[in-house]
Image 1: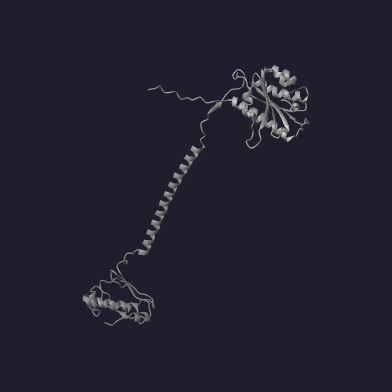
Image 2: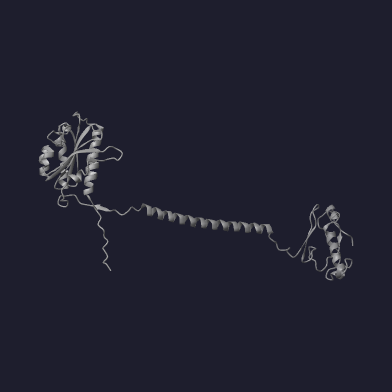
Amino acid sequence: MAQVSVAQIRAGQINTGQLRAWRDAAELDRGQGTAQDPARARPDRAGPRQDHTPGRGSGPVGTPPASTRPDGTRPGTALVLARPGTDLALAVGRNGPPPVAPRDQRRTWLFVIGGLGALVLLAVCGLSAYFMVADERQGRASRETVPPASTTQARDIGTRTVDPAPLTEAEVFPADEVLINAEETPYQVLRTEATDDCASAASGEITGLLAELGCDQVVRGTLRSPTGAYLVTAGVFNLADATGAEWAHQRIKPIVDGGKGRFQGLAAGSGTEAIALASAQVGWHVRGHFLVYCVIAKTDRTAIGDNDPYARQILFDMIELHLRGGVLERRATAPVESTLEAKPAA
């Protein structure tokens, strides 16, 4: 049998029909007969078979064996003929071997899946740590923002009935100086006085108004300003109730503006006579059943201008900070009584 080389197939010297014939002859020589005796090879089919498979040439071919298909191939084999310039390949199997996924592709997918799993695990751990830290901070913040239990409670000073204790000089002026700001020089207390004669601290129509509202006490004191340029008399009138105090607060302004009455300053010896002059400036306010007031004068007896910043500051210090925010604030609060009962001795 002639030998066939790949070079001859590539050069087109052998067509597909001749190639099939030579292959069938080789099969018959191995035990199924010879290619020259087609009748013995296939009793049911006689005579030569002419194959006109397109190609570079054509020629006679032998009768295919019984095991071949009409297309010239045997069951279980697949003949793949490449075009000139390519190799000849023979794939065995009815439909070819089952496809096998490349090992590199499987490994890539394993890496991808493993990486995704690691990312999910890290995300879960990160979220868990975040929530733990957030909860801890929230708990710490809530503990830090909880104010301590108050040691005082509000006390009613709306009437003299519920607040019968009289004022004292020690309550209104507990020291020889009044400190408003720790970084500033304090006011020097020159004289204090407590009396049940409310008329001694006022004049004109204000005197009658105080009597009408049940004033039974006034505590006042004279001070020198931190600069020494001003004299101050500050005091508290003890009225019957808060309603009367509010009424006095409204009625006093037209009286003072009309020159029909005023609050009197308290002279404290030589050099303090200016506080008793009519040119002194006044201010007043209320809290509970108390009416507080302040009289200001310059030590050189000159008039105080309406926009004098020092006079305004003195009024605020004495009325708002010392009397209302200090003296009366302490009276309007009381210490909280302990609710714990003493345990009996064993």
